[in-house]
Length: 246
Image 1: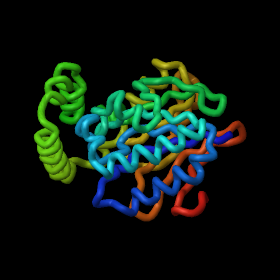
Image 2 (image 1 turned 180 degrees about the vertical axis):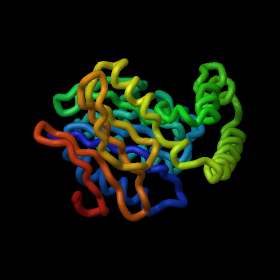
Image 3 (image 1 turned 60 degrees about the vertical axis):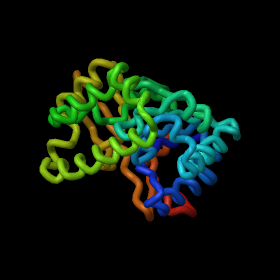
Image 4 (image 1 turned 60 degrees about the horizontal axis):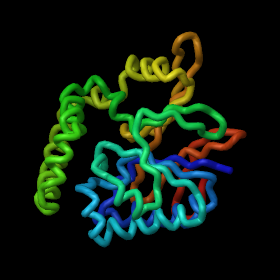
């Protein structure tokens, strides 16, 4: 059966098109899958598991849980927008939370799964910020604050990030070739799947005398989604318009 991998949907109430696409994907292809992997940034942001009380977030989680209820394994690996998910989120979605870096058997191939932001090592300011917010003490302190305050802080950070991205080159925010090669070498695999950069593509790298394949998942717009479909015969990017995979 086919394993589907998706990432970078950045769902929020102001993007009803992307939300509708996901809901139809979950009720369609995902409901007939062998497994579903979500590699981060499902939501535009996640302020903590008490954010499940928001009707929009609850609706999305309920739709994901419906897939799991059909007996289909659903896995979630957090991204830079939703790294504050926890066990309450996992239960609400019926998912298993994964921690990167992680090697999984994908359609018979040992594969390194990442969100992808750790590969963007040229962006030093971002990497420093990532190190700070992923520290257990920072997480604990932040989650102890009232939900409304957390949301306000996150929205402020999002606005600042948007401004800062306008000053950064596209190359700076992309993956670093040396970091990619190091990941392949460190984990001893020849296949990697990640998202984060929004640059859907299939790359080949020569690492330690081997040809390694790197599949980069794309983001979802309000009119089109995408996934990587993997089975024993082939790996292929497919596109979802709400009614059919192409």
